[in-house]
Length: 333
Ligand code: TYM
Image (cartoon, rainbow, N blue to C red; front, side):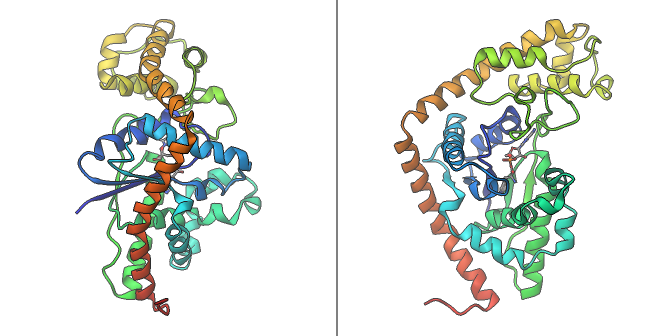
């Protein structure tokens, strides 16, 4: 049996990277598989979030997910902090994972930066909570962008160590699903850095609620090089910004980078960028409109998320209870 789980942090409005690398792949799966999608607010507070902003961004994220095509009727869509099993299993996994494993996490090193000592303890143990998010549902398929690969390996190490230490076959093996040309969408200002909600420069990313003009302007100013586009992908190996823009156009128009190059070979960016901006605007404008529409009725949005949390809790609470039985905790009743 397959069960899908994935999550996204409400640490800003979702970017084109979140959309193309993850959210867009979540949508078709809800028609064929048991899917659980979560706005991971407990993860967001590993870095300080102003309270009013966390609240607004949590609703914005939920609205964006629904606007992108997730249906609260077809999948379980909820907010992480509404289901206590995440934090509880996360604690138990803090006691399974080894410090040495966490020390190897490249995302911690990137996010903590030079002053590791000043990072929150939550940021350090974050991958354990992420493992709990997935394993609290015995989910075994996790659609994510490429940057989450190492965290999913760690989740498998935790599951395996738990099963081994307690002599059980309880937690399943997790299969990462990292798909397509857009598994790694890069910053518009630096083709070697991933596009991120938390980048200080808004020019580095397309947000799903950017206006048509903002999208066109950001593409126009995106860093490129003076050369024309080649007719083959290998020729873009040393041109990360060009390769990124070609990949984005391929992803939004549902084609391949090779096909994009076949059409645009010999053109400079003066000609290519308007075509890319038009394709992005055509794709994203309806999503933005639906997102704004949903945000006009926060009560309905909150109610849908609370129903989602009830469904999620009904799956996760018994799995947490069995985990605690296996570990030898005194049963509550
Ligand atoms: P987050 O919120 O950073 O990103 C959400 C999803 O978007 C993908 N993504 C990208 N894909 C392609 N190009 C990019 N530039 C890009 N930026 C982000 C991410 O890979 C992710 O799939 N730790 C996770 C959230 C999480 C989670 C989980 C995911 C918490 N628990 C359990 C899966 C399962 C995160 O910070 O994603």
